[in-house]
Image 1 (cartoon, rainbow, N blue to C red):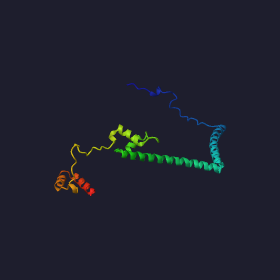
Image 2: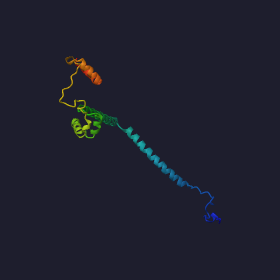
Image 3: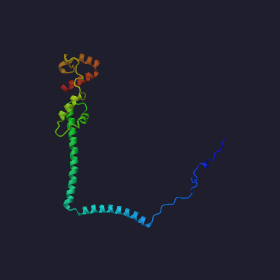
Image 4: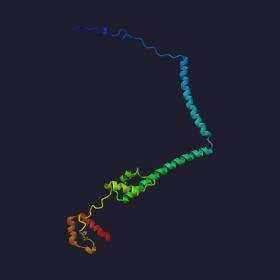
Length: 188
């Protein structure tokens, strides 16, 4: 195996440079120029702030009142806008509940972009229900499957009172029996 002197391939000045690099020095004129630039920038900022303060002090009482009233008008307009939006939302939810929408909040979120001051919420919600009929509560749930058969008599009512039928209903469907009892109590 042959040995190589790796330093033989190295640059002659590499690694031998132990002299520190001299720090940059400034002359007095260069230093004065840098400081005067920074002072000019700060002075300009202070002068702008001073001008604003002078304008505020120089404002007449009428100008101050005008500025305050404009701020109040803007604040009241924002509050009015918020209240108007909440009123519109409540109106839409009420109409949605009236139309039988399952979730009035969801209905409002679906139509809020279509609502304008001129738009009638009932019309907008009706269009929504036409395009998405699954949002409407189903009224046929719980109805008799054969509409040709007469509804079952309530054996708890005084005019159709029947203990045998009451016992039969209690055995077959206790929940229905309780509902029929409640219905009979309300009729009395």
